[in-house]
Image 1: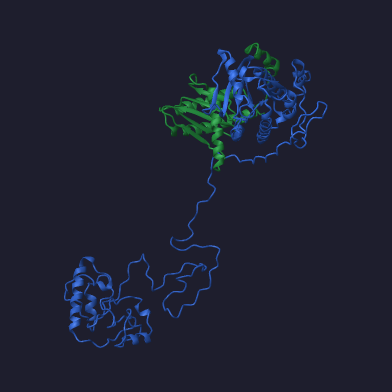
Image 2: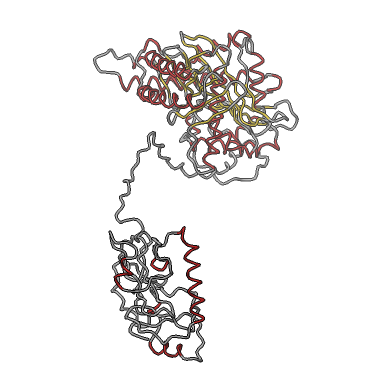
Length: 476
Length: 160
């Protein structure tokens, strides 16, 4: 990318030295760097391996000085030539204004020259640049080695675009500056041509037409200096043929086929500079804890199961069962957030005439309910202000006293004769003598598990209780 | 071959923004670099550094990390930070063509540098957008011709 800075009166162009590995690209830059006058010399940057093979690129800024008031600068780059550094070569080629292809003149390096040239063409295509439209010169290096191909052969093999070619012996400095001058002129000519074309397209009709007196850059180059031959449009070459010596009068050999065009680079959308939240803030649509499902029509309510009275339908949906609206808590289920309901007291065996106290009411003393019903309060501690554990309102600090009272009553029960089955009101749980009496008999669900037949069977002397089976409602 | 045409007004505007960034972030110097390696503008203490080479290397470094980013599924990294013993470099993406290189030492901290860089990038983006629409306007200040370049090269490399 050539830049012209009118503020600092500076023109900057980028020239890349391309070619196969060990062809002499870095040597070209080193020679140039060595010959630059001290007053304008800049440091050359070389990113190379320990064996002096270019790893990333070499960079040499070349300041040609002021020309017509403009400081003209060339930024010279080289690329790593080894095959597996293709990604790096691609990066360095970005914004290139001119290319110098340094070819190895040795015959056994011809294929590498061809591969590198094809690679150059492919990499430029990725930037949308046609090699035929970029200022481009060829340098046939290592002309001093034995077994080098002739210039004609090299032209035939790699000079597809008929660009200027220069022989060189880079390690001795021969041909290096000739090549540099040539590419510099072509780059500036191309830059000027673009500048002139822009001016002619923008020129208003009222102003004197000076553009007609400005010659075409190619003609200018032709008149002032040996112009390079016109670059024809590269025709599709015929299939590749084996390189073989031919007589002079024979037609030119078949050109190797051009490499397949790489697919165009997909256009990446530019990253947003400011990321705006696009999702609306989610609004809670249901209370926490309730299952929320959409898109399902609620199934018809299943009939209650007769084998399990009291169990609410759909409480335990099977896998894959459709969801439904929140289920209201059943009377049998306890709300975990609600205070525990008062537990009805189960009359213990041996305690006849005992009715569980009524739920405490405001303003009534702890013993008022018992006195109202006429029942003998449990325990002899008539002065106790605490509620019994059985109704769920026991003060934890009186737990020990409650346990002691209970054990005392149990011992009294053992000494007393077995009482007849007491009359049980509906809904009350009666302890079964075959059941462990230490277990609480106040399970609200206890009455829901037995049928009358099961209960009578359990109450027979030879029954073997496997679980606590209190009587059902309305049963003895 | 795309061209960047910078006029004095553009450079003044860029220098103003970069100067403000320099003072607010307490940085040593700041460079505005094109991804091709060209240095577009700079502010701060740059005499001790080869800013041309630094710009080329920063662009190359950014290009290399961009290739790494694409390997892991990202388009490119918007911020790069290199920490040294005394001096550090903060490289941030300005737009699709340019990067901002900020060199600072222990007088400031990376968070402040990043914060101020983000603010400055917005201003630089506006200026760069104007620069892209710049055209050649002054025929009298036309760039040099190739014959002049050849003569200058002859002067620079006599006999070569």
